[in-house]
Length: 214
Image (cartoon, rainbow, N blue to C red; front, side):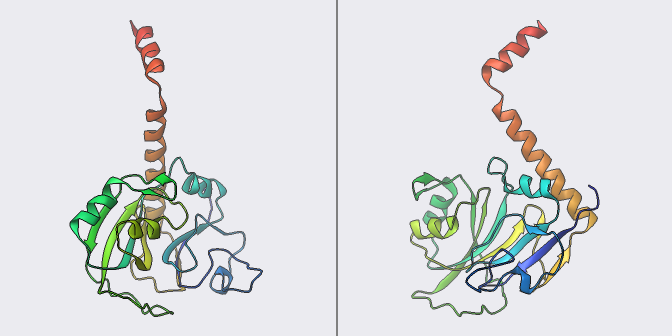
């Protein structure tokens, strides 16, 4: 694993997932003063929660490679009511923004008791929470998904990246990964890459290998 630095950060609402902005908006620089460290993936300006940063370029590539996305879990506050029919549509995949989303895990969730958001929400219907776990990450995908089933997103908080959990990190706080967490993350990445490699093997290639065994 080497001597790389890997940290988890709870990105606040209204913070960019980068270290500079020509428009003067708040960035990661306000919270993290570490050399040569970059975000492995992003969260939207108006999204909150778990962000992983590292100086390991290969790890960043592995975490952001669209062919090998690891699952990420979000708690999403929506304008309810949340119905089982809406959850089933989310689970099965949806046509949004010119593409079809992959099947995902979608469940109703209890009130998580998060910190107050900087900009209070203004719901037009009783808000409820859902838990979404997806293995892809197109621009504003979750917001488009919930809107497509009649549940506009009010608040979006990422709570897990693979085996890594937000737990009790408060907005603006960060911590180093433990050795065990890093092992679990790298093990999951390898499992996903191996699974993807297996799926890419063509039937013709498999037949050729089988014929050679005869």
